[in-house]
Length: 93
Picture 1 (cartoon, one colour):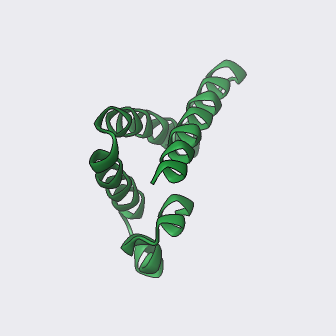
Picture 2 (cartoon, rainbow, N blue to C red):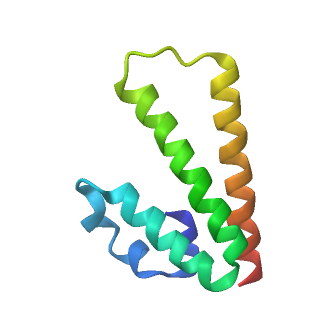
């Protein structure tokens, strides 16, 4: 959401409408669309990694599966790299 707020995108302005099911998909998709117009490679990386992170979150939140330190560390590093990619885009455009 911060990425969209900084860019002044429609998603940020309409965030109250995103409270329902699928709000994560809408934000991920809108972010991908913006990134794709700026840098297709970073857009592809963003989407691939977000899908992986979201899958990990679903396991952690809804499955009866232990998430150990190693697995959570990998997810944390993925999130940090994604934040870096988004920061680079915010600072470029």
